[in-house]
Amino acid sequence: MFVESNVAGLSINGEACPTVETMEKLWTGAEPKERAPIVEGITMNGKPVRQTEVFKSGSVVKAVANASDPRGYELTYHWEILKEATQLGTGGSYEPRPNRMGKVVTGNSNEQDITVPNVVGNYRLFVYVLNGRGMVGTSNIPFQVGSVSAIQTAVIEQLFTIAQGVDMIQVQSENEVVSTQLFTIGGQLVVNSDTDMIDTSVLAEGIYVLKVQDITGNIGTFKIVVK
Image (cartoon, rainbow, N blue to C red):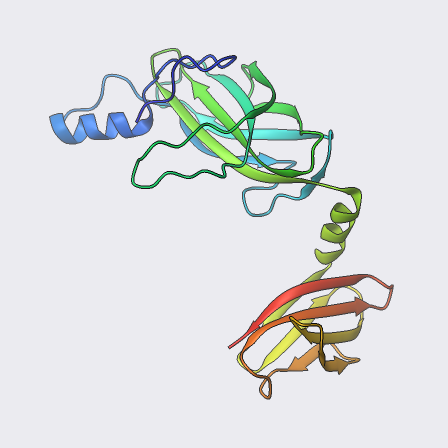
């Protein structure tokens, strides 16, 4: 309900989150005296959560926080990147704070150029939006830093869309699809087609690897579950 206090380099000091005003209204039946900023989410290079790309190490990314204050107070934005948590608490139990990567960036704009870490890995960008009235809104977005080869693979795979029905898989692409192959997890080729469609009605249930190629030579691989 309250953000952390005494975090090195971060100008937050136990401000109240929106849940506090909600509980106050439920308990008292009256509108809270103070309202927390509303943060609806973060985008990175224009993409929301679950659509973020794999970023090149050390690259600069434009982050935007969709935030507003119900009372119209001026807002300040505090940004930080943390490593993705590997030790998770349960039921509100203690969870250690992951290491910060780089420095906290503070400003009065909801847009900020963020330099991603130089080390390949999984991270999370946090924003704390303060209104100077003891209230805070927060949001975060996960992202990945990858090698150049991983970035190229991710870009290529965005060229294909996999539509899976009950007994079929269809590959959709702006370019003509010239090859679709389906492999078992062990690497055995079970389907080899020169069309954009695979019949899965005769396949055993399980996990497969789909390899597709378009007429320009782009190749994408995808995990497929046949039920």
